Image 1 (cartoon, one colour):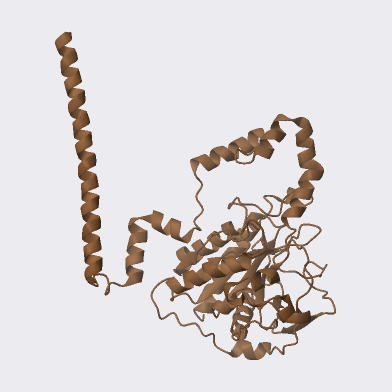
Image 2: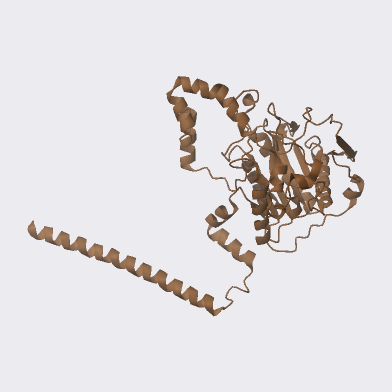
Length: 425
């Protein structure tokens, strides 16, 4: 037994030496690689100068999908840990990442308070941020601008549930306020609030789109300025109080809708898409357009092949949930509204009519194939970062009172229309 113990200790010591040797050799290999790389870099040998960038990226994305997932930040993953959290939330009514819900589960008094007045106030506060024009003035190129520069053209702040502010009580915008001008032609309707621009719909319909997919790489960028804009899970939640209109759970917000749109474009129509799910509206909506401007601008610089830019939102009202839906193929689907920014505030945006033309052609195609699925195009005096690229739009898919499934269905029809319009079918 004594000899066996000595042999065992000797074996363990030998194994430890081998592990140490492997670690030392690994560190040495890394060091040699770094030195070699630095030497090649300093020698200025253009090793990858002739490699096609998009081909290289595509190869990396195929061989290592994690690169594509991390860079685009828009692929939804249903992880095991996420499913466990969902089960705990369903069974025990608390979220492991939210201490307030844990306290509510342990204390009936706290639960009553939290789900009552406090929860309603919390939901209200989530939507109580000054709206978009503040953010637009905070963008990098506009640091010198302020409310005084724009004079009376900047209204006093309001506190909407939606990304766009208007005072129209009719859900389908069938009756517009006196300050809104409605232009219609060829089943196309455009609402322009406080904007005195002449719009010739027929002329824009007949003009070709300036889309030239001459570069290799992604063709469409999808992103979200108000990333946490959420939907209800089922219609029974529509009239319930205390249902928040925002959520960071990407299964129930605009990121999920953007991913459905991206996947349909990729898999069904063969259109390469970048879907970015960076959260731009936390801690609040204030400054969101400035943050999303940086994201979109950086992606457009990295991918000059992109010719269509879509900022996916959902609509909402101040005082109640907004559900805008119609029937397509015997299913309820969310209605779609295009928002077109202009240069009415004085900020530079010379090609906004190209974006309006794009919206009109998409509207016509959707109306032609699926009557009733669209709402009037909304023209605004603010530009919403749409000056970065032609064929750039805000797309409002449904409202905070639509179910996520209604919006996912709608995104498929939008993808179909988008494919036909950009490919001139």
